[in-house]
Length: 470
Image (tube, rainbow, N blue to C red; front, side, top):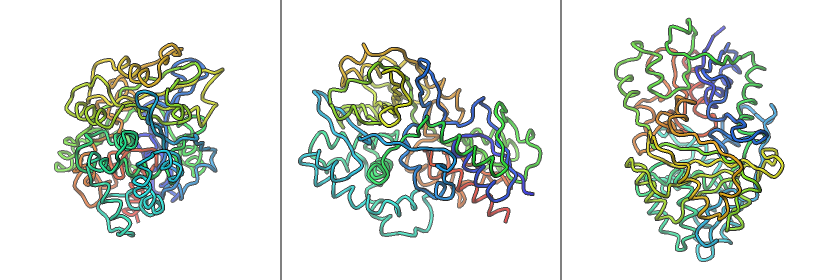
């Protein structure tokens, strides 16, 4: 029987393991932490009874892709839930805008920009199944739907600031800028629209659901299916060298490229080792988990029913903050991604106190404390927020990196999303998953199609490994 070891139990490591095990491979997953799941871990980090997601929280690309069509995680207990509003963007003075799953309902709330929103997201949403099939794989491939991909690519290649000019109102521009800022890069650079166009369209096609019981439920469902196929997960095992692993037929590494280089050592071809060592990581995240009595009192009423809130002010403010962050300067008013998962999954809260997870974009390796800057940003659009805080726990960049070594310097996207690394991730190669060492493959979010709990990096890496065995 073919044997395989997977190092790392994040969603991609588990997806790789499950894909291999379903093909009859004997699979063992080794995880350094005491709890499996990587970026899909959850826990009670503020007050007892409140469940917070440690990293990944909303999952618009996890509902329908090649991996989740092959493995129905809902059959293993995973349950998805949606809030009435998919994402929101509050502005000063009680203004703001929201995205609902319906393109028409969203457009109806944007006044003069209704037509512009409808013309952009209507056609993309109608074709998103085909679009997703194209971009959830390596960028360099022969497209099955070239015309559909071309239309999406025309938007994706633009700087977000250029695409934002199609909107005339501050609300619509901010709504677009907030989702585009998920790219973790300046909004005036080429291809900074790619992630925003994908996630914005996914909100209309699938919504931005959360996993009932926390994102940990995603990992638990994968592990349940893996065990059904004879695979197993061992925690508390830190792999630092390939010599620890015996001689498995296949080795898949759910690690950052530099971590893979450390494990493989001299076995790694020099050109690959150089590429992995030069792999660029992006800006970082600083997380604060709050326990809030009664929820966040947003002045913009519809924002109170959203799961995801982009807290950054106007498009110009976000563009300035992202530019400063990329340059290594901590902005006074950072872009903050805030999650209100209890709006879809009430079991997250307890007795009127709810968990709020906030992530600020900060410079790579930022050593300061961004807690006050994050709290002030929320208070700005939700006066009285401070008085409702029952407890909080901050996770600085160094703690994020310590909890998950893939997040080098606090980079939760596992790699900068600059144009070069969008196309050639993690290195220039026909097979981006191959390490150049026979039987060894990289399967983390540093490989295509990139970050997210969609499992596609692991699924595609495992497919590549299976092809080599066959």
